[in-house]
Image (cartoon, rainbow, N blue to C red; front, top):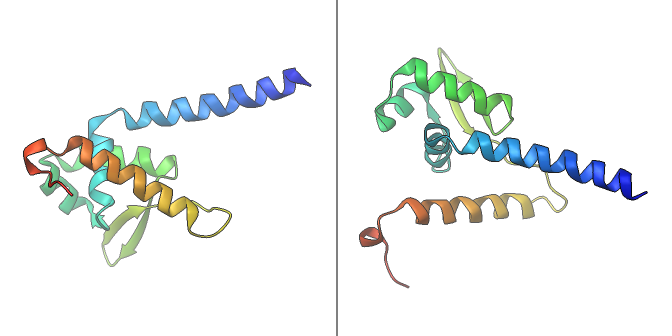
Length: 117
């Protein structure tokens, strides 16, 4: 019985480790931070990040393959947004995701820009 639990835990740890590896790239993490503020198309992401379209599109593809973002076609444009994970009560997962994104935003904001509460 312990072996099965251990294998299950090991598989979950592999998934989490893979996700952290994906998020360790500053371009992909930057895309997620920007998308936490609302949907954007590739052109807007390129403009805000100062990167070329092929670079941004590559990273969007990696994030899309891991189901972290989703694209919505509007004419010739595709607008990307964060995927809201399903959860038990319909709101818990979204609130948790927003909390962690807020923590990441605080972590990358210069201290002189942060306001004290």
